[in-house]
Image 1 (cartoon, one colour):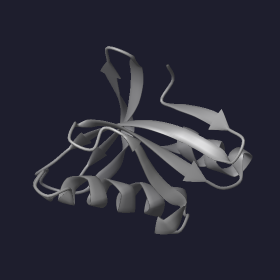
Image 2: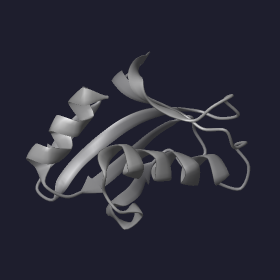
Image 3: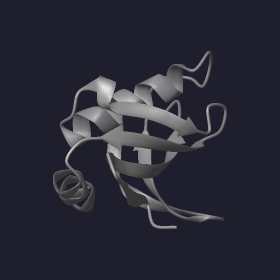
Length: 99
């Protein structure tokens, strides 16, 4: 699987979250067993879903969409997550390719 895939209402984005990083960042690729993933580093610890929330906020900021456009699809307790981003598919993919 590529790091993202089109859906009728947006894109699915496969990410690998690095909690407790020195600084937050979105960009680069990480290999995983099921394909490539977008890297997201967050400064929060993986406790009570805080790292997941921070990753969703970082992804929203990087894609220039409101936080409400990001939904966790799978991976709530894993570093490997999949988010659905609602919006214009063409614009979202263009922004993802820049990361």
